[in-house]
Image 1 (cartoon, rainbow, N blue to C red):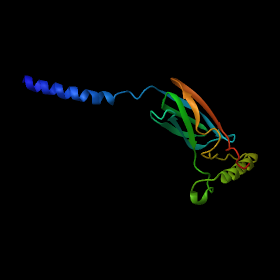
Image 2 (cartoon, rainbow, N blue to C red; image 1 turned 90 degrees about the horizontal axis):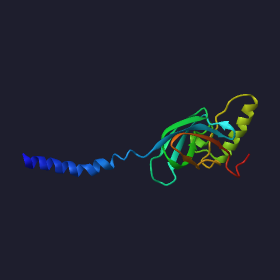
Image 3 (spheres, one colour; image 1 turned 120 degrees about the vertical axis):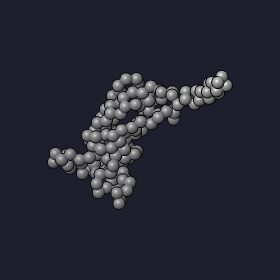
Image 4 (cartoon, rainbow, N blue to C red; image 1 turned 45 degrees about the vertical axis):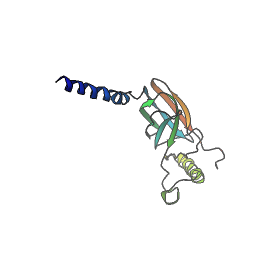
Length: 156
């Protein structure tokens, strides 16, 4: 009887480091909410991603809808913030990646639509100025306003 109890305790002792390693709580997190626009137009549909600048920790993300987002469980500290969107319909060959020239044409189309009070979606190129910017996430609730602009040297 005593020998069995000793084996059970030994097994439990062997499992404790494994269990403790999986229970670090993942670190402190916060919620980040805010707005996203590109070339002055709210991003209608897309996603936002927070990646730790240190390369350590979890990536967090969520959706952008109507130019707004709210992401919970974002790790604390400096984060690279990346916005991605779908290409506007008809842009990009075969529905594939969209070029900066296509985006410039889409921006011109948006300006024409604005003159007619027709809302148009904004597509954000990966190299948009302000994309991948660093945001320092603090404990609690954070507010972020992202005003992305066309890449430097893009056709106007």
